[in-house]
Length: 124
Image (cartoon, rainbow, N blue to C red; front, side):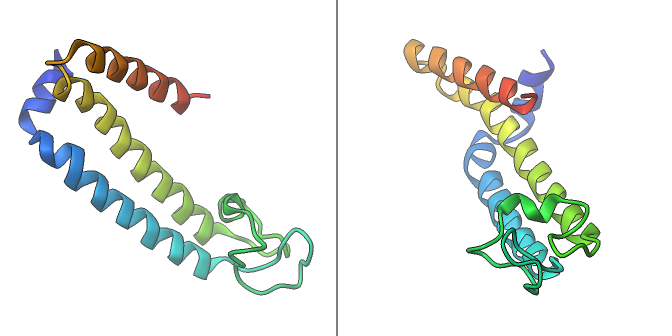
């Protein structure tokens, strides 16, 4: 099976520890850059400049236009790219996890169920 061959090529420790840490760090850095690039405006005050951590929604960075009406393309692209990186990384994480827990049947079954639910969550 393709997944088993792929897992054998990559060190399981790297897949379960190192790569998710790196992806999370990249996600946080890109979100900070996206917040800096956000033109401005909040739900209650469209005259606000820049992103307000307490007054903007996280998803405001992913919209075509900021709340103040300015184009928000850079922040939108950064937001989508960072979420894609994290989504792909943790998809592989959940695909590797059942193989690591294969010795304990209950944990293996729970990992399979969790993997299935994670994959369903990608498309809902």
